[in-house]
Amino acid sequence: MQPGQHYLIQLASSGANGTALPVTPDFVVTNSIFVIGTSGKVAITVPNALISGGCPLPNSNVVDLVGYGSAANCFEGNGPVADQPNTLVALRKANGCADTDQNANDFTVTAPNPRHGSSPFTS
Image 1 (tube, rainbow, N blue to C red):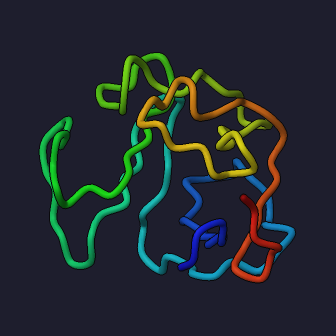
Image 2: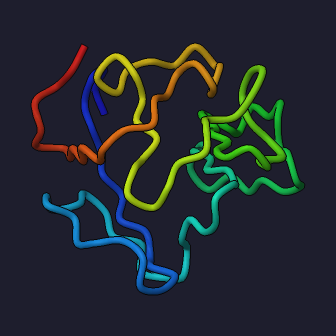
């Protein structure tokens, strides 16, 4: 990926929540990996890296980690991304490019705006 480029990953559904993506994802997860509940964490790791434990930070295998919801047990910085209802998402500020390692400040809770690899680059 290049700076400002987007990559959309479609995870599995845990039930009736959610809706079809309005754009084609770049990658579709084919097993039961899904984001569940109102609090949790999502990590991007280096290829083939395994991470474990309730909070794998600090860890050189973790490229980025986002903790979301008030009960998140792991996040970057001083706090997780704010709670969001099922109709809203946590979207990175600065057109998806903010990453100061402060989850609470790098994201805003807003309407979904999915972008994929063919979307215009942002800066």
